[in-house]
Amino acid sequence: MDLRRPRRGSRRGAVRFHGTNVGIVVALLLLVVFAGAAPFTARAGSPFPASIAGTQVADGLPGNLTQIPHDPDIWRLLRQGGRGHTTVPDQKAGVLIQASGQWWREFRETLLPRYGIWGLSGMCALLVLFYMFRGRIRIEAGFSGRTILRFGSLERFAHWLVAVSFMVLAVTGLNILYGRDVVKPLLGYSAFADVTAYGKWLHDFTGYSFIVGLVLILLLWIRDNLPTRHDLIWLARGGGLFSRGRHPPAWRFNAGQKMIFWFVILAGASMSFSGICLIFPFTFTPFSDSFAALNLLGFTLPTDLPPLQEMQLTHAWHAVLGLVMTVVIIAHIYLGSIGMEGAYDAMSRGEVDENWAREHHSLWVAELDAKRAPDRKNLSE
Image 1 (spheres, rainbow, N blue to C red):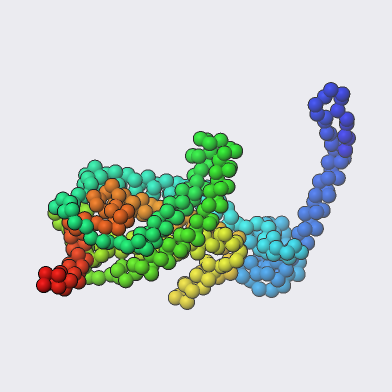
Image 2 (cartoon, rainbow, N blue to C red; image 1 turned 180 degrees about the vertical axis):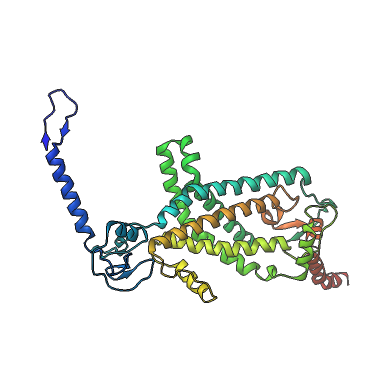
């Protein structure tokens, strides 16, 4: 190697390698490569290596390794996720190539953003078309001036705890997914880095308030969200959303609201658990455990997933659930605000107009009237 000093006044020097020195460097590199490949031995009589240091690989062939495999066999073994021995505490380092990471990267960088945009924009387009053709769903009998208590203070607190928490989670999550392409050009690199760092911190801790809200609404509303035969009638008539003057009977919650309730509970619980798995990486094995349970039903799913693949699948599941919930909640927000006259009062003041309640929840109002009848009778006497 000939290291020549730069001339005085020159900003950089030139580093030149003689041909002989290049050959020495290449020889040393080859020596390191072959020394590193020494632990990889092949099973006698088999064209493919079965394991690395006794660890089975994808082909599942047992046996001890007795000879060094050829280079194509080593590469194939590494591409299949073969494991070797490592002296560092993190045993995950024994896997040199984690092939499923390429699938995860393709999913995270291409498929997830693409289908997410289609879902979000598609739902917004459908709501615009619905508003154009149906308009706002009015109280056909008009406001009566009399109100009925629909939700108490604790119920409204639980609802808004879930709602506000989810909106924070959705905004910060969408920034993680799309911010680099949408937000960074507007704010600049430095500001975007700060916003995303604080957003990630806010996303993690807001998840706990979301879980608390889920538990509250489950305890408060599970009784009123059990299915009844009237739900089938409501669904058959489209909930009266597409026709005027035809409101199917419903209890305190109609079939559409019950579907939203159970979707939020189940999807929210799964998303919350996957989020905890991401906050505490390599602590849980949700997919290996789930696959083991499904195998009891006759499936043949892998139950010994590498830790990195567990995290990749968990991240993918968490992101997909978050996008699907965001798409559904957009429709829920629309119907609960500008889409239906009088609906927002239920969660803002807790009381709704009596005519609104009789049109959209006639069975519930009839039940309230039956409970209040003895009191009215006593007052009249």
